[in-house]
Length: 342
Image (cartoon, one colour):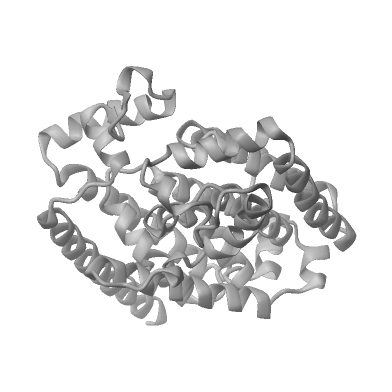
């Protein structure tokens, strides 16, 4: 009886998901707005300057898939993504029934985050990378993890470095002092690099070249004036603000209010992660260490180039699976038992 009740709840929530995804999909495409990256993937142009023939390999791979689907029907890829999310939902719901996921609301929250909804119905690659990262958390063997790293790396090459670095540190070190050392040394390295003229010029050029309008904004989500000290300050503040970028902007449009709610939810997850921080879990559980390292390094790597909330709101979703681990999604004891039986 209890199992039947759980199955009914599962399918009620699937219908709930479908309603939200399809409603947002219809609303978004009725506006006729596409992000610059979406225009690249479906039309063969990157922003307004760089021709597709000169674009990076990762863009070409994605465009080869997105372009024909868009040409068939604008709703085809979003509907395919919705189906993929439903399959992932059923996978995660099984983890809840197996007592690996602590609370059902973590599953609901993952799929109902505004960024998850937006990326599911968009012509962007970030939802696939996020799914690979979520599966990485629940992968049990070495080769499963390697395959997922490769898949994530094809779409976003920086994920290879971040995953291997975080995974290696989580395996090799259990001491809290190693994390503190990694924490402090990372900031020292960033500071030294910023004061290296060539590296500083490359960084500023890359940030400003992403969109010509950013020349007027300055560095970071708080729009600091361009200088070496401000470049370092922008990277550090962006590491925090990348989780809730719409706190830096007064919403005035329906979509901006939608993303503002997303920032509130991420802020709550951060508070949960801080409240549940435990040195005991850090020493005992590799997955907890992995989540902490990935969230730390990932928030720097993702945040350092952001200057507008509309861009940051996309990229931060890559941190969501690991942030949810830190916020209390995983029952580590039950996961350890399961791994012991593998």
